[in-house]
Length: 421
Ligand SMILES: *Cc1c(COP(=O)(O)O)cnc(C)c1O
Image 1 (cartoon, rainbow, N blue to C red):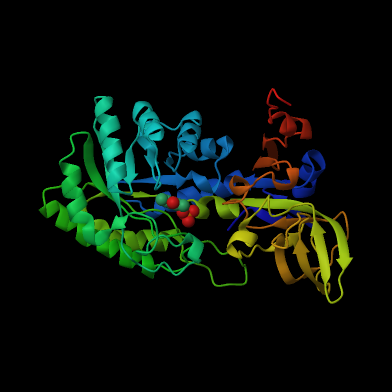
Image 2: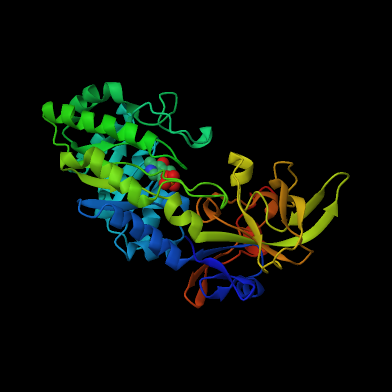
């Protein structure tokens, strides 16, 4: 459920008509709903009620400072995957003890910054990385808390570009080698083993792959404890999917996921961490765009928007579906038109939808891409020298620009001219 509904014929973000925001900030733009962000965070938090747990929002999904502050105020931890994200989490006021650091290529500098600024744990993805963490920790006179990310070789049954839990993927260490790697970790004086980490992919629409992975983690926990390791924390990653198409059957709910987690891992008495990104931010955001032209092709109509692949790359990158709806509610029973919905960028890949039946639109009309809150703004670029589009946060009947659109001058002035020119 989200808070983008028609009221009196106008699509609203909570209590603010989307067209009003468009009139003030111009199009295209991203718009997030505070109530939806909060609701989705709480769904996860409550799903793990009764177990010692921390929900660490995977901020790569949407990392605006205002979004982070909204979630941090509810007690959210953060899952970061770069030094930049770590700095963002700290800047939003998240204490180090609520930040976990994931990612396959943490650099010496990133590890140093996180250890100096405070970190809950590193999720280690390889032995060379563990050696560097050990070295940096010792140089600071510290012990670095770590989990090892294990790759359980489970098919997440999701898009190939976001499946991470098979042995052919670059992530984690093979679970078959885990005992050996933990033994090595225990021998390093700058390393403190605190638990196990697993993350098998994103946009999972079934519980079964999670369950298979978590059963393997439960088995491993017992084996590692028998080897003498103090396994007290299990980081279960993120990945629960969202319904991108209203017409499709919905993925499992956080409460069902939480129930499965308790059933599979509850007996171990570990603290549970989860790292949801998409499910918290995805349906909490829309991208609003304006129709520039409707162009008659030979055998089709093109709806040409002012938003493009550089603003929302998911359709081009993952063949992702976004429901696209008019901001002005269509008359009931109005006959639909079939469009290829495209942006103005000079790439055929700049296509949001092909053969999409939707209410008839005219130039100047506004449309909203639903479920664009996660992996939307954060993946945007300035390709074609198109400015990064603004982000707006709604809270009840208020809204605020949380990242303004840069001017052309600001964009151009970021380049510097060498002295020989
Ligand atoms: C991307 C990622 C997540 C979040 O995945 P979602 O599908 O957005 O929930 C969590 N943990 C790790 C390690 C990730 O790489």
